[in-house]
Length: 122
Image (cartoon, rainbow, N blue to C red; front, side):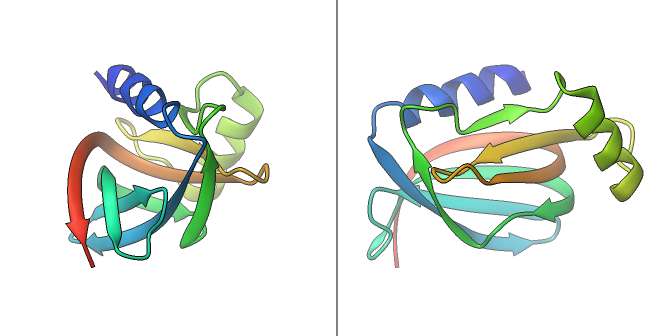
């Protein structure tokens, strides 16, 4: 299920040259990231991370639509082990890796992920 959501996110983002992203809210263990080509007036996409235990991320960044911007970290055992040791990742949680347009890598450790297309005006 999580890989299906990740694939959907990357497919939607590929329709844009770039997207700006920002932490829109964090409440009761749920992190919402809002995304749009211009965040001045609002966002059109939301990524919801459910039951978040760790956030290693800037508050605002840009995404290159031609590259995969999010994936589940399960192909790099060295990184995965280091994050497990540093942040005591609980069984059942997933390490999500987010990439910005400048090559920075962010990590969010959460139980689940959802993707929503929603116009939110600021």
